[in-house]
Figure 1 (cartoon, rainbow, N blue to C red):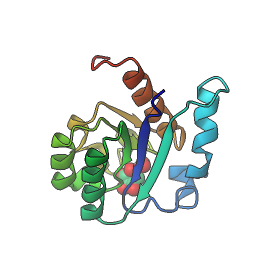
Figure 2 (cartoon, helix red, strand yellow):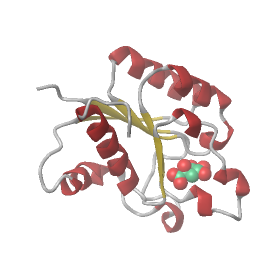
Figure 3 (cartoon, protein in one colour):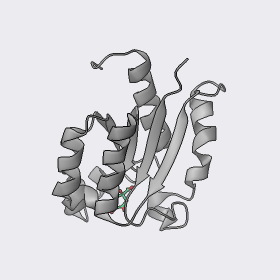
Length: 157
Ligand code: DQA
């Protein structure tokens, strides 16, 4: 049986999830992800391998995504932080690497009407889906969605 591998990739200012502005981003850390995944999978281990990477630097995130392509990873749950809204370079990378990506945000960026720039994503068009507003649960939902899609061996929804 193949154990599929998923990268949980986080961009700038996402190295302290749970501690950073918990009123906006929640107080749960990424360490709760495996338990959440098991819970969502009805109490059984999903049987996937999770790889974690965080960087505050745009080029480092691109390097990691290119490595994900070379490694043949099965998907990426990617919270690019503020680079979501500004980085054409990250969007360009996602457009060609051929690794399915789900865009993840802890907060509901579309509801942040006081900061309209946050409502825009440059990378979204190269992702298979977007999860926003559910805190850490969003990463679990992204992995589950990627895994179901891969297990079914299909490209359609
Ligand atoms: C974020 C939303 C971004 O606007 C912000 O810059 C972040 C976190 C989120 O997870 O809600 O750093 O991506």
